Image 1 (spheres, rainbow, N blue to C red):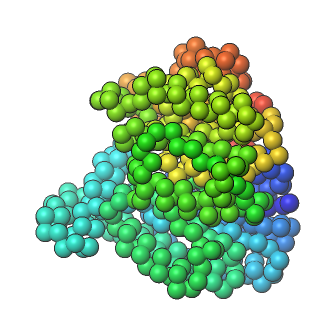
Image 2: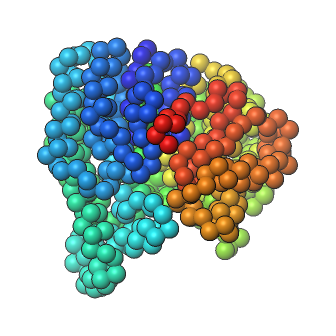
Image 3: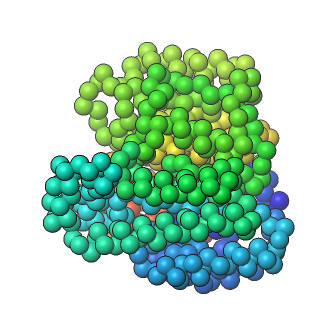
Length: 499
């Protein structure tokens, strides 16, 4: 099967991981030519992308398309209100042209319901990110509940946040919302097969609630509940849709919860995780079946999610070693029975529970897991792991084992430990961890931090730590590009001319 793929951006989670899993599942993936997709703060040439899309579509069986990349040139660019709404709708017409020329092509779209704050591009914007997030919640309370206290706090924040930032925030939201409604209509017209509307980082109360209500009404009125799916997430969409194209019939799986907080709402999300689980499963035609060969273990927070890299203020909110040993025995029992065991580690946000992995490795070799995910938000991790479940239907071969190892190295060890260690070193040198100037030296910091954790890695991997590299794709620490030799290394090839 040949699938065209226009990723959300060039980060490993949105570019490399989806392609790795698609190739593992036997698909050939056609990507934009080297250099056509740009990096971080620089948007891609959308006209070039549209031409590539039209030229490539006739050579493919299916196409998975990030609407943000197609219309804006990237996710960050979609939050900046740099493109007039009329031009966005004009750019969207390329999908109709592709449909007319290649009627047999299955088109899968992913679009974002914008986050409740701005992008964090440096340490200064982090300040406004926090204030706009707070403003979003208060704005919702004021408008939805006529909350006078929230209104007073909104007026106060409006005096603190630069007017230009709020103007851009709401202008970008309006554009994004109209694009989402237009994409829903494309599905209704038969231009696209399916659409995922992914709710970016948010909170249960926020401005996104107004937009979500309208989009839900559109979906239901047009009778598209089987074709348009809306839930929390974003970065995982490419991986999910590629697997949907390859495995449209999905599969069954048994779900086992590790912990009692099964009704928790994850950090950066606006609905109970159970709802997101049901939505993601439904979008992939995956079904809960008690006797299924695949078993999804979900480690939930003991109390509530906190950041993996931050110390815990209250030890009673942490699982004890006995708790973790008990969970390990449950997974090991199913593995010994020949079931395919996948671990979704949601104890923390933005990283995995390294202590649990160390304890688990004493009863079950990590290489015996068929999949693992823990970064970034709960739904990001969920979607990536569901995609891995579909991609590994043929077996736990070398590529799947390598992918799991990379997730352990990245999602758990990097995010929970290495990232914080590197951040402290960079800050001590006066670097901005959201906009790093000396990436080469920063990568050296990563390598040193990993090497300092060699005993821990030996324990988790039972002395068989795979050879891997750790680099920075973008000049920030929020994510790293961590790939093993056995997995074939990164998919993305940097364009040195545009660096």
